[in-house]
Length: 150
Image 1: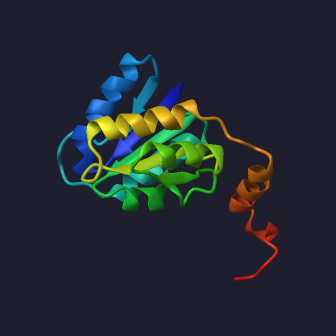
Image 2: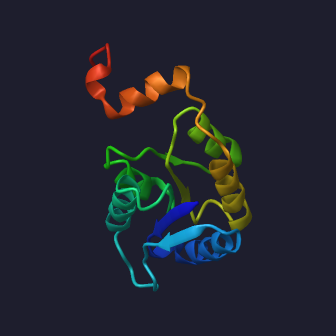
């Protein structure tokens, strides 16, 4: 599978370990940076990851920052992306099954390497459930389809 991964400086070490692990598992991994410990802004890398997934350069994406929150917000600014912040495998699985998430985000300060791997394994192994979920996912990208006004 083609996977794009990006982080900020807070998640650099976790990203490097995951890039190596995913490559060993046979995935085609595109490391979108950063590549050194210089302080960077997570939105820049979240937007870059979102563009790569939206352009079809990757089938799935992995976004990492200190908490996972900021970079997930940045990725979700791209209407072609559905990025779910996860911290354990069930959420990762449900993000695919129910929400057809194409990107997951995790916080390097909150999950360790083994939990991150477990989340990614669940994310990559799960197919979208379709059926009743498809209508809901369509509404995520087409707000005019929503029947109720906020």
